[in-house]
Image (tube, rainbow, N blue to C red):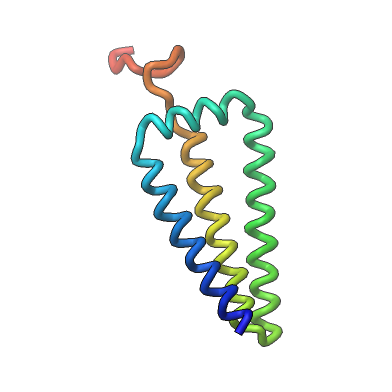
Length: 112
């Protein structure tokens, strides 16, 4: 019963995370502010992305081990948690790779 609750909670967190981040990413001001925050400390941002990717990999590995060990619901819960971390990391990397329009050095002039 506890594994089922864990799986359902993981699914709710995944859906909430995905919907929330997609909703926020549609706002150009949020993307700009997040981009500025990430680029204020680019080394820390890259380290954070690497650690997040390691978390996703570890959660996926634990999920696979639990699945092969016969703990299906707990394994699926860890795989869903890995997917949630992947969504967060993916949106963060997407924002980090955006070009900030109107900033010095941005290619705003199409004739240049």
